[in-house]
Length: 208
Length: 208
DNA sequence: TAGATTGTTAATCGATTAACAATC
DNA sequence: TAGATTGTTAATCGATTAACAATC
Image (cartoon, rainbow over all chains, first blue to last red; front, side, top):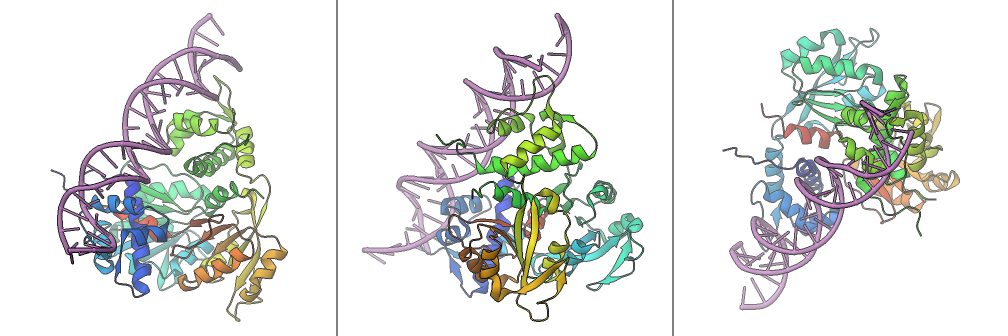
């Protein structure tokens, strides 16, 4: 029936890491790698890498390993980043502007096509070639561009409201930079970027 | 013997999330919560929350739940963010400056005390009250301030070099914004912030 | 051929959950 | 007291790893 059997999300979460490592190897001019080499580089067992990949097909050759370019293209296809996604960003404070200026999206499958803020002083500004629009126009703009992915970079107290608005307008994947947990319907995916949680996870181990 | 038995890292990783949720509840004026309420809010089972907390002690009261303020203080102590850590940031591009301007560090246990860049045009600049220093001076500045935590926001090709330098100078926890995997000695902890890996994890599910 | 590495199976390991006695 | 919720145990569930036949 379903071509894709139910693959654990934890496996899906590692694929972008593999993809990033493959990009790094490709940049260094290498053409072939092995599960062992990849694993060493990432601090992951070679068995795990082979097992993860085996969910999707057979990408290597016994005795040889994996052609980096080929595996990379396969992973891009699996993750659906073999084509470009339009992304909106809401909130043009320091963080939002930094994200809008970040050059690392395009060659990895994403293009920021719309930016929003509610501050009249920011509306109309040009940020990295994108004109900042009034947040009031979020629903129609998201629908007009058929945007499915958005990044939220507004202050914490406004994040849930923005979230509700864009979800109503059809957004199905949200990268949330505000340090709060968002409540969303089951079909919407949320990922969080909160540097402080990462720092706090490390201080636990800093017995000094 | 050891007061702290070996607690799974996956549990440690959830504590900052619990702490963040408690802050959110406290901000809304609530004084008491339960594992059930917290779990609903976070999309985690109540059993897991109780199990996680039980590694560290007993913080609740049967029939009542948890006093938010008390549990929060306990978690801060466990994570060692009941005091403030000095943090360095290396790389004053768009992202580094945005991070330096971010106001959310201080009340959660961190203070940026030093900023570095190698670009002469940026050295000497004042960013959010911090004077940008020459990256050449990283080792002595890190030692002088006894800095154990650093954030790397330099272009990918320089990240490993910066990493080696600061690790030699005593840094033991690194938050890496560059989209590459860093190689570090076992005693050094690295966490990664790469928005693209989060986005790619979500596009897998965007069957549209 | 000999050496290397894959893909996969079965075993191990660890994490999550269900359930409940304890007790506020 | 009755109701609620903790902390903890035991069972379940799922993920990782070790090992190896297949084969390049």
